[in-house]
Length: 201
Image: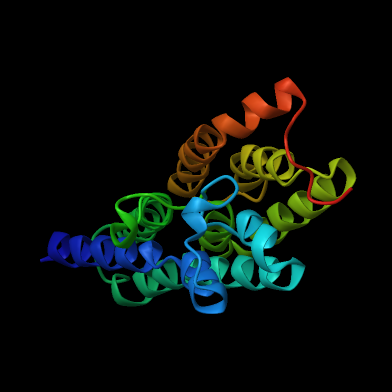
């Protein structure tokens, strides 16, 4: 029975993670398909290219909520399972996959940064805030969202360890960081080539 509950949590988390907030907002506001614009990502950075800074932050907030919600639900409804910590971590993993491989968009999507930060906030709010602050500082100083994202998520397992979080949370952050950095491989190539887009000039 416990495994059925956990399976239900994972499926629901994936579906919630798959909700393409950036795609929906751009489609409603402009009628355009964001997958045909800029990087083709449905994330906040690409939304900014179409709708500006206001919607950049709006999509980031919505994606963070989308990341946190399934983890919170897993903590509430699966707390009596044999592996309550595992259910929350699996929910977080499902969100990351859902955001980047949305069932509603032919298994394409964004790079799971904001959603990932949302999952971390739900697992350990102090670590989540630290990750968000690091992202903000690095992005502001370098002017590259990708650099801020890569450094922030790379530090997340270290922060989980420093805040003495449970081992599954540390492992999740390590796996999530590798996955998110992998999703940024095209950005890394552009950074090396010197033609990555800046968030501001």
